[in-house]
Image 1 (cartoon, one colour):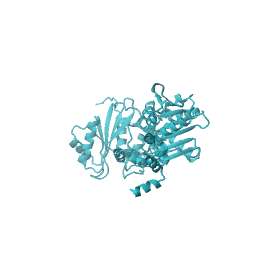
Image 2 (cartoon, rainbow, N blue to C red):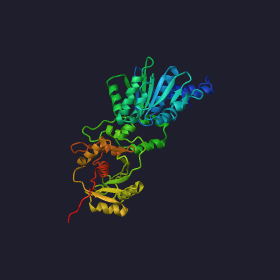
Image 3 (cartoon, rainbow, N blue to C red):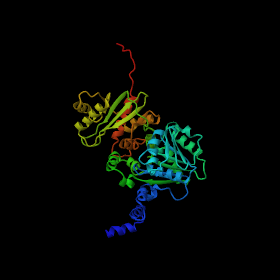
Image 4 (cartoon, rainbow, N blue to C red):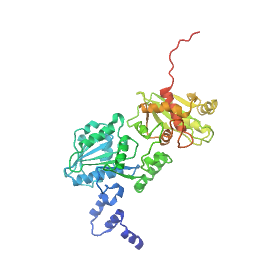
Length: 446
């Protein structure tokens, strides 16, 4: 008891100071209950505004770091100290701005103590603070709504998710900057997971050049004490062992490999933000392993939408599996997604590949394909489809995307792993959906 007490008394961290005050008999219980709303006593150093001068503060960190709480607390601080503040709250959509920035577990309404919560006016997309400060919600999907309104401050959430089509993200940012002209010290706080999109890269470059942009970084582990074990397990399962783990967990902005057919920016542009339309055709593409129990068996599910866009729907790849095992995985994927075709590369095994698949499900609509060119040569036209906006990803497929970014012009593969089995299966799927030969009517001569 004495040792623990001595350690507490000598602890000069914010947590130690908070614990000592809570033990103090000079404070009422009401005052002690209010401590959870005192951000300075519970925040980590990297969650607090930098002490020196800055114009843009970007918190670029892994999932679950506490970015939203940091942004909301900064807005509350600005509103409390500036009664004339006019604050823009910008997210990828108005729905996300409301659900995350305002009404979320770490949003503006949740962090204000009872009796001091601002008034939210949903129909006007506006928050009114008791002292007169106001915050207005905006959607990055509608950049023109920021043309005209003036602001003194802004909080921009998850700029890595802002829509990229028609340069909406950049246009939104520039309109916001042009309207940030109220007060004597206009500032912006940005909270985002690092993604290799133009706007994030632009701010990183400005910070490196010393252009009044300051970046605070952090990882999921920094906030592990406040996160559910299941969340930690889920992200470890989803991203563990991948390069994308550095982005989604460690908060690192991934650099592209020189000469890669796919770049991180290209894949982020292909990320589906809206609801995925019901596909008119679904294929399951298979890249069988060269040996039993050796490489992965790449299994990719893709669908062609009524809008003519092909979408990656699922990555069902299996590792270290015997032929009967990977064949069952293919059959399960085909049934789950109601596939119209199972496309399987037959270079490794030939007729054996079809017989193994038939053994798993006799009714599988199998089509064998033969590779006459190398993996990279087959991948180049598919990469061009991505650049043309013809392919999208209905989710984040960490291991598949790592492999795509390892395919290099000139025929080399930079990893991860020995072989891009998932990427090769994707190439077969997109070739079938978008590049397959269409049969033309012919007159057969005797």
